[in-house]
Length: 256
Image (cartoon, rainbow, N blue to C red; front, side, top):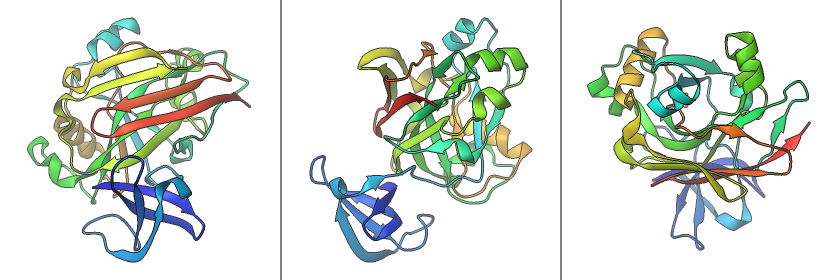
């Protein structure tokens, strides 16, 4: 099932997206998308609504240096254990919304990633049981003020600006994430191309590691790391991240 969030003529709603490309329908979900969703009976053609970020997370947990080639391009060794950091939920935007470059940064980078969306409250989850707490998967861009990340020595400021966590276009609940193509384009030119099978720490291991530290809540998002090929974005460009089996998340870039 494809789960999304839309702005419709009737307001904001969670929806299930049904049908084939070009003839898709957004079917309104009552209340929330967790568990077995119930429907209100209202629906809209997808082209008549605006896709928003598919989930409202209480927190975004991100994994750093989870592809060996990316760790190498950052000039560091691959970490033995998952390296986690947080992005504020105020950094989340949806498809088509502009990524805003702050005037205090001279270099703002794209980082295309597969994201995991948590489906129920959980703590101390064994890796083998991780699938039972996952709602589904979406596409993410871990936007980073690279100069500030390096200058600060910790990553909160460089990763935390408003608009620095695009998510979408929807959540795919029926997906095997083990070996998916992942790629990023900048103005249509390929800049990242890899597969999720090259992640150093798999999704089960990541959820086990993170849930030992903190309770995960329904809607929380885990970014699983970016492959090699990171680079800067300039105002006027468009960045698009694609993950096989989910879709493409596209956002324009602007200066504040």
